[in-house]
Image (cartoon, rainbow, N blue to C red; front, side):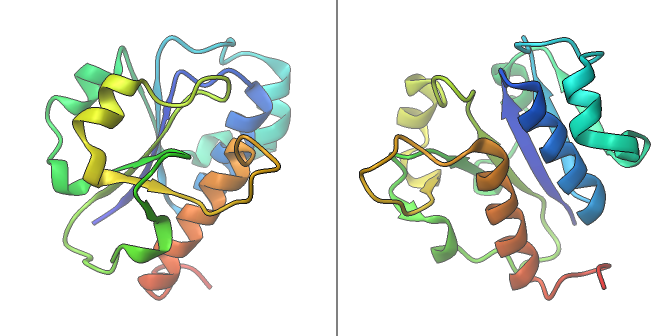
Length: 157
């Protein structure tokens, strides 16, 4: 099936633009959960995505609750610094299901009521104590490429 990146209320247009470019280059779907901390007409957003925007498979959602309402729990991975297991310890090889990787806003992460509802679905990227978290666009790229690596990079060359 498909890989999906879900950004919950992103704040920084350049991060979203970089993520959109990665999604365009890998065929990964991008979901933006509103409200956004910027306009989708923002020049920094467009600059970071360059001329790749027509190739981004993008969907906008009014809220995280409405997005989650029709998703199967088994397909959801909440990426958070407090996650219970490293992102690389999960198996993303099943090509008959969708995988949704949900990232929080840069300044606050994911809402605690969501992470506490799905603790076994919370994953993390290992890091030391010198920083609060990795840059959002870097974290998204790491997760995308691990899932694609496990799937032998389908449709990529």
